[in-house]
Picture 1 (cartoon, one colour):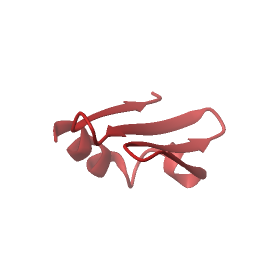
Picture 2 (picture 1 turned 90 degrees about the vertical axis):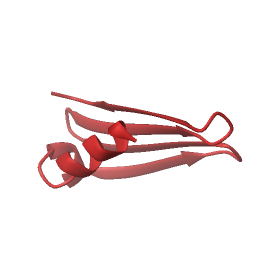
Picture 3 (picture 1 turned 45 degrees about the vertical axis):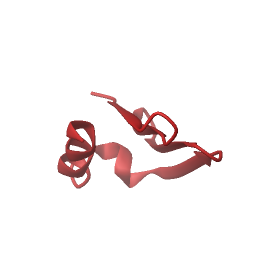
Picture 4 (picture 1 turned 180 degrees about the vertical axis):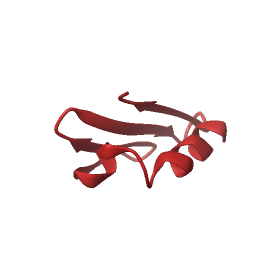
Length: 58
């Protein structure tokens, strides 16, 4: 949940969110990614394990 909160906090300020949005999903996995030139933000969600991981460029 902490990682989701991080994503919400930077959603309006990180340059990645001004770029392309990608969604890759399977039955139990989601990979959501925003890319803007050299900036990126990404969240991986595993519904089977009920886990989530985020990463952001600096």
